[in-house]
Image 1 (cartoon, rainbow, N blue to C red):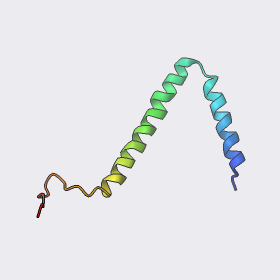
Image 2 (image 1 turned 180 degrees about the vertical axis):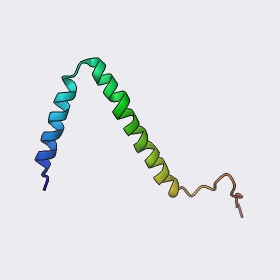
Image 3 (image 1 turned 135 degrees about the vertical axis):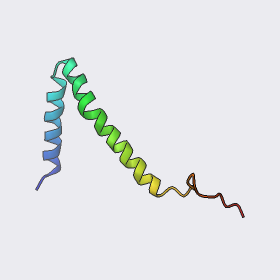
Image 4 (image 1 turned 90 degrees about the vertical axis):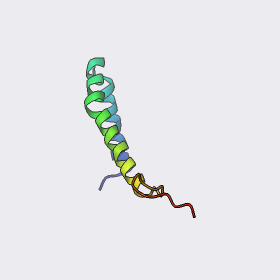
Amino acid sequence: MWSVRTIIDAWDAFELWLTQLPFLFQVVFVTVVVLPLCAGVAIGLDRITARFDRAPGPGTPDRRD
């Protein structure tokens, strides 16, 4: 089983590896990995929160009784 210390050590090793890369490779890594990952998280959160949105949709008549 993974402990918190194992996760922290793995993250530290990854961070050290990434910061020691030349700047061009850091930019490529961010462009190829981090930006699509952030976009995927944002799209997922948008879809999840849309399920809880109680505002009427574009085809739903507005009821103000």
